[in-house]
Length: 291
Image (cartoon, rainbow, N blue to C red; front, top):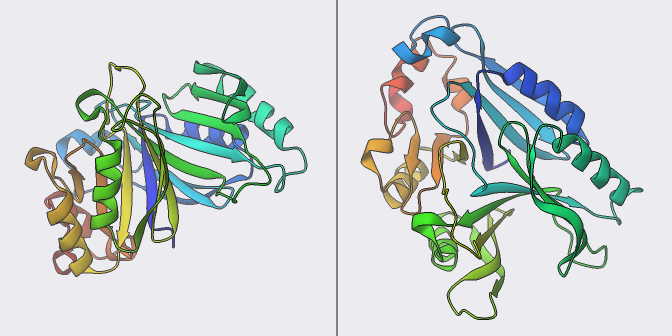
């Protein structure tokens, strides 16, 4: 089971978004769909009774999910997803990248034009029609292999220049975590241009924005951590939660503004219990025995 599954908040159009991503992203399939129950919903959820709740994709071996909800939150470039097109893994890596770029830019917004950069011969950054940010990169086939999809955290706004501190913090809090390569901007000993870290063998990256930005992290993209039992839930909740008013049904916001869902790794089975969904809606930290 994948330990960290990013969740994208989609404004009421999960079915349309599903069809779009299946056509836009290579090697992508739907692996799970869940629907809202028809009872036990909170008032603001009643319009969704019986409709899609979450849709989980497999994108080249990486799990990513959408939450079908209202317009409360939207994604921002503070969390994006690297798509690593590796010529050693793909017969036509550059062509696959170009075709994916063409689809993702339809109705989207280009943040960095597709072209040659010092760190990649072929790279571009786009926010798609749903506001989800993708960084497409042709990787060096001689370099160390990386997964096709890697989440990237860009620290900006109130969290500007906090990437170094945050990565070290996550490495100290999460189980089986380790810091990898880290490069600072040439004119700074604090601001991080690029940093890698792993949590239970899964790669994430972090960076500080080179310029001030009008956005920061939001629940529009959250990171679900599949915890191994109540003890792990308790530990992570205590270490991470920094905004009490943001705590709800397993969601929290950390000191940098990143939204996490701390859930038991068998949550889907637990929600099959009678009344479990309604009980979950009343919780802040998830207590397994009370589901």
